[in-house]
Length: 394
Ligand code: AMP
Image 1: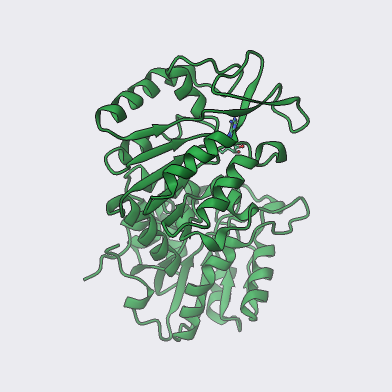
Image 2 (image 1 turned 45 degrees about the vertical axis):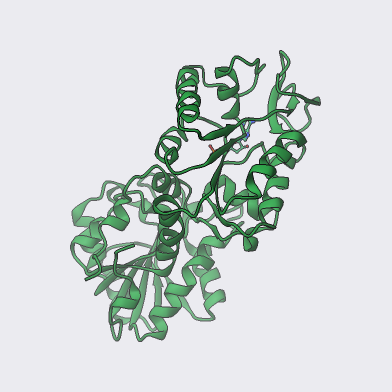
């Protein structure tokens, strides 16, 4: 990544305006269910403090309040957890801009201040320049460490870069080092596992990665559109009728280019989308009235065989409905197998990241992305506006 980072600037006595991604899942009592995104911001935050920053003003969004104040989407639980993790007081403000905020930034005793949920303001997602200017006035330098929103040109990711020197934090740098590298310059053989609900979400990625990948392993709901494209019966499985021709095109192109596409050869099927459904294990063909919700053991072995010689593995999308225990085995077996390999393993964010966390193998992967949408867009070959806007290295 040819962008300046916090290491390239003098932070001494500066007020750092830092965009973090604290969009963590909360339960109904506003307890944090998964703190990975908070923990991931700590290295940059500590570096700023240790290198003499006068203050760090943190900004983030949480959920989708759509320009309204939503009490359950306040960032207070994040401020509390940050205080505990840093062993330092974090001042939580009730707003993101305005006089009270400006006053606090000038006079507070606390070194770390967290602004209220940016998406309580409609101007944030509209990249309103006036709003961006007000945010920018709170710091001397802008640090973007929010990889999860780097694919959005919002006031706090792109807008503020017009008014302040702007650099990347360590999380952004790490995400780019792994994801950018597997796209630009992967060590071969590169095997990509694709799963998840829909083919339509992954088409651009397949097209972009087609010239780089040696083998695609396809499972999850999206596999059934490919199986149908081969003329196989898929019962009531997830199927995108309007994408069957596209799937055919992808299969043909891969054949011409000598790229392997491996589809499920056996399946765990259910008579409804429910963990209490009737379940049976079948081969490649799904019986009428049943839906494929996980890959079977032969498929897992086939996938393992392709993975064992890979130098790089990219995994985007679970190969079954892993959230329901009866359909979790395929995803779990693959996660546990990849954990034993020496290959560079890069896990796209979102559901695949949740799956590797659920199966306790996060530490065994080379990189688990904190950004679902952002990692997908990178794999699609797109430029991320929140990164493009940062200052280039000299
Ligand atoms: P995505 O966000 O596209 O990666 O999709 C992730 C979701 O796909 C997860 O919530 C899985 O439960 C779901 N999924 C995986 N396999 C299947 C399947 N065979 N049928 C329906 N949904 C699936």
